[in-house]
Amino acid sequence: MTNNIYFIANWKMYGSTSTLSSLNKLINLSKQKKYNKAKIIYFPPFTLIYNFMNKFKKTKISIGGQNCHHIENYGSFTGSISPKMLKELGCRYVIIGHSENRTAGETDANINKKILSALNKNLKIVFCIGETLKEKRKKITHTILKNQINKGLKGIKNYKNILIAYEPVWSIGTGVIPKHNELETNVSNIRKILSKKTSVKLPILYGGSVNDKNISNLKNIRGIKGFLVGSASQNSKKFIDIIKKTIN
Ligand code: 13P
Image (cartoon, rainbow, N blue to C red; front, top):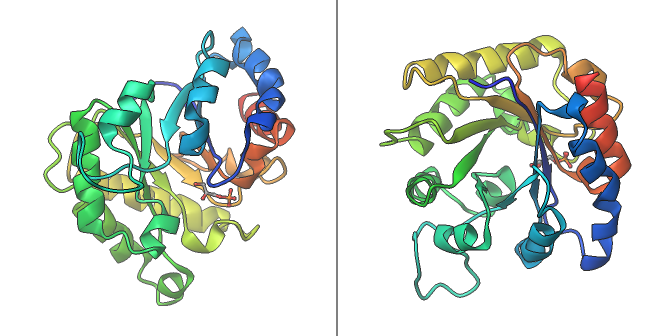
């Protein structure tokens, strides 16, 4: 596993061409030696990927798609984007299994097909897992995470292009983050589940209400190699603060 710390900006269905100038300060930061180990990846909506590519052309910042179809190349699927299309645009990553898509009906089987297709196209996967509040209250978090990992990663032979993003559903967009012990336990359980599948040490990231205030606590969680940031990533100043406070 590399020494990189991942800072992932998931813009969801937000952003317009006028928001691009707000990224200048972040680009400057990414060029400073001090932040060399910050691996910054942006996931803009599909409509802005091309603009982001141009904006980040001479930088080390990578770009990914927020989702993809499970068919690798082309097909009659209105409104969908394939792994091949993302790759052709210059994307290096794709998010798969985000809870917002699981809630909208995406199944573990579908997620598994998407991961296999995207890996075939040499995309790196940010594979999202996490329990709902109901599941947490029932104390079945461990089983849920185990099922999501085993079903989502079924048949994977090469793990080296996969990152795991642990995003408790109840923490996304709520301002509530897990308690220190709870988060460390869940991350350590994820590590144990993964170690039964592969000897590759996949980076485990945390996502859910990460902001410029709680990052000082979150960065001390054992076993976490970075953060998947939603709303705070749309504000460049906050996103920069998150990076600075983690690395400093
Ligand atoms: P928030 O940071 O807005 O809670 O979103 C987290 C998330 O879903 C990132 O993928």
